[in-house]
Image (cartoon, rainbow, N blue to C red):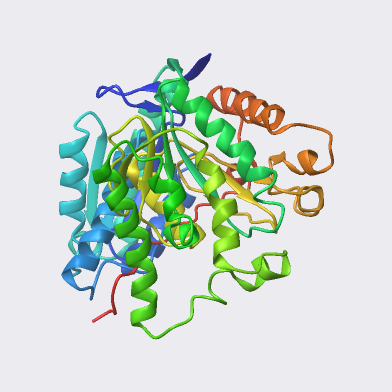
Amino acid sequence: MDLMGYRREDNKFGLRNKVIIIPSVHCANKVCENIARECEGAVYINHQHGCSQLEFDALQTRDVLIGHGTNANVFGVLIVGLGCEVIQAEVVAKKIKESTPYKKVEYLIIQECGGSKNTIEKGVKIVKAMLKEATNLEKSKGDFSDLILGTECGGSDSYSGLSANPALGSLSDFVIDQGGAVILAETTELIGCEDILAKRAKNDEVAKKVYEKILGYENLVKSFHADIRGANPSPGNIQGGLSTIEEKSLGCVYKAGTRTLMDVIDYAKPVISKGLTFMNTPGNDIEQLSAMVAGGANICVFTTGRGTPTGSAIVPTIKMSSNTFCYENMNDAIDINAGSIIDGIKTKEEVRDELIALIVRISKGELVKAEINGQNDFSIWRLATTC
């Protein structure tokens, strides 16, 4: 089944051809936003990181920024820094260029440009030139083996594990059978299901990593003398009918389908294996989505029972409801209604086929609702206190 997209020189396949403006530090957020506002077609992100971070936290932030720049859905990148921060714009830009030398990558430093106004003026010229080149790039054919599918559930309810997540699991199996890759994340939402996931591991080493990541996260929470309940399941989850983290986990794991687990990787690290990869992330929707995008996801499917507008600046994020009320109540944010399974109208395979057809249309240029709404959500898992 053909997809249309942008074949990069390293053979990666982009469903989009974005020019993105990235701040290396939160002090540059407003400058990035103002550059984007003057450059129709460009996208930007902002965040609260980049300085006063301990070394391991700063490295994680840097990796997520670099991962967004190297993502196959990106044509060109402008990094904007202040000049005195821990994570330097020049370093981020060089790392992106080293990994993807064919990309257009530039950086600006506000202090060296003589202030925000001058930086914005220079940035607008750079980004407009990139956009002009990006527009001239022709699409080429790909297929589902080119996909790195990010799977996510947020605002889950008691129907999520009965409709939307099994339908997404069926899509995950399809993508893997076609030679593609799938990311399962949300470590906190796999607590209680570690045995189920580990049994699917390709070998004992991968199975061991499953236990290390899931039990390690649970023990981390316990070390704070904290109760995970109330944070996960969230108040909305509980109102939606979920009573325990284990119950939520049993629904969450359905997203990963039934195929062999090939790899376990840390937060935002590149996906290097075909088949199913488990990425260690929090359950927080946006921290997880940002990690999968940084890891190389070029398409995401996000299931929800309560409804959410979340989306990525560079990766189409398909929103699928677990019930018909959610689909109708938040129709401006939801693309597909898996509530049709609960209503007895469709099977999970028929909803999977809807997803497949939508992905084909997305590759040909159709926008998902998160893109139409301009959702550019971005957040990074913070590991320690700010200094």
